[in-house]
Length: 113
Image 1 (cartoon, rainbow, N blue to C red):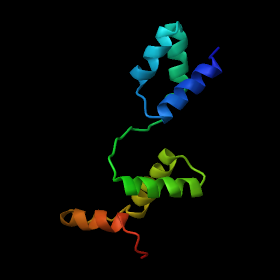
Image 2 (image 1 turned 60 degrees about the horizontal axis):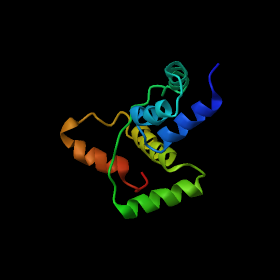
Image 3 (image 1 turned 135 degrees about the vertical axis):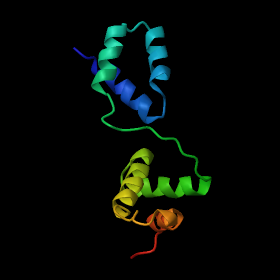
């Protein structure tokens, strides 16, 4: 049986941005069995998600953080929502690849169409 506390620890550590090796090391140090750790990691395996890392201005961070609180989302969930909405809005607009910069500006623009 999978230990729910271990699963919760792994989910929280991932949410905070730790990589799997960074999560595994302290668990092994605390004496957790490798098979228990493996089972817990398998149970929380990310479903088709690809991690990305971005750098943003502090002011932008504060704005996104404020929006996340207003929407009752975590910062990560808010950023995912922004990217998902931008991708859906821009779907099918790649007909003219020469103007990719204009497309990206229009996708991330706040101007209503």
